Amino acid sequence: MVRKLIKSLLEAKAYPEPTAGVRLIETHVSFIFVTDRFVYKVKKPVDYGFLNFTTLDRRRFYCEEEVRLNRRLCPDLYLGVVELRLTPQGASFAGGEEILDYAVKMKRLPEERMLVHLLERGEAGVDEMTRIARKVADFHAQAERGERIDACGSTSAIRGNWDENFRQAAPFAGVTVSASELAEIRSWTERFLEQNGEQFRRRVAQGFIRECDGDLHCGNICLTDQVSIFDCIEFNERFRYIDTAADLSFLLMDLEYAGRPDLSEALLAVYQQATGDREMGELLPFYKANRAFVRGKVTSFLLNDPALPPQELAAKRETARRYFRLARGYTFRDRVKPSLVITCGLMGSGKSTLARELAMELGFLLRRSDLLRKEVAGLPLQPVAEEYRGGIYNAEMDRATYAALLAQAEEALKAGKGVVADATFRRAADRESFRSLAAKLGVPCYTVETSCPEEVTRQRLEARRGDPNEVSDGRWEHFHRQQAEFEAPQPGESISVDSALPLSTGTDLVLRAMGLL
Image 1 (spheres, helix red, strand yellow):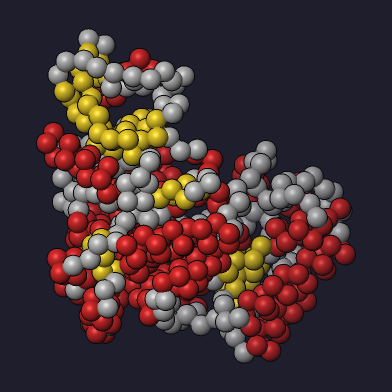
Image 2 (cartoon, rainbow, N blue to C red):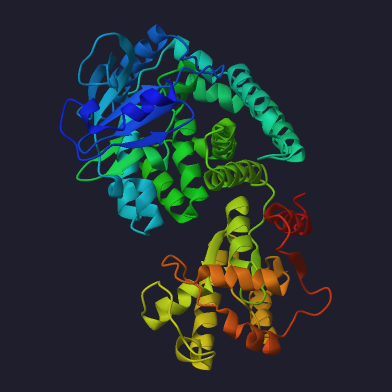
């Protein structure tokens, strides 16, 4: 579809029902037009190898397939396939002459109830995971199986899919993924397939290869009075004919990418209880790595769009980079010991960004003092303007916050989970109390000290001003007072990270110190 036709579809008159406005969402394979009550999805005439929408007949066929397959999980959401026709004013779904294309027509779901947005607002919890897990478990129990489907569960078929992924990701080496990361993931994948061949064969024999959803992630789930799971894979059977563990792994991975490994764990527990599938656990890191890799790859495809604004281009590049890093992170899981990682550094030095990245890549729980301090004080998670060492930053609140952080770290470590404790740790005594906890529990402890040039710090702190989503209260006018009383780690006590360098550089420094690289 040419851009001038897209422009005409942003007009309300192009639709058969009245609408106050039209919004366009573009993915690597579709143009999605959102009206007040409905959604129209037009497939792009693209060929990525794993999908081919280059002819009108193909697009019509896959529109019909999309409706048929998605009605398995959303019988009332998918209304059918509609024609896009040419009028003197341009393209229209409200009639016309020549057929230009076809579209899937759906009812519009409330965007504020999409799982991805619930996670952003902190409104998704165990109850929501329970509802989703039971819905997916019921769907998997009824999903079709057979010899043709079983064939896609063989190690040769799985290896073929991985090989395709590596070929298609290769052009993005040095852009969204490094050559060394690609090599590490490839080597681990080949080794895993060789060492676990019997387990893959057992999954086939036990009937776990089914016609699944194939695209089960947080952006495709809406929670209202019912659970709506939409937009499954319609364009390639081998991406749909998969192990139920692979299907579930997409959502488990996406929750972990969102920084909620606790919800991933809760979802898995309910699903396993509902299905009785306890053997899937050993394969989950493999399938999660695959799902993260695919997300990194398809997000990278969007970088080839010359119309993408620079700011959006940078955001897509960063998203793809993080998915590829998570994919590599799963290759560490069999070697990562439950450990305690504590950050240390001045305000604006990049502690929280590095802590978030480490927690995601290692599969550790992230505990932030900025959040804990406000929970201890009974305050909402929004910025507050306090005098230096005043209000919730006085000595008593400092002690209470670090005591709560220490207690949470102990609870997690005793449960066998790794922890990243994100705080300033300006006092040597506080760092020592956490090291003593690790020694008592017999787990490794790593102190990561972040720093950067003062000008970079100032820019970061100024950029936070007015951001309602920023939890930290650090301000430039407080920086030098904190700097004056900061008790820096002694030589050899910490892993030093210059946060002005690429984030991956700092993360790899820590991973290397942990013996993972």
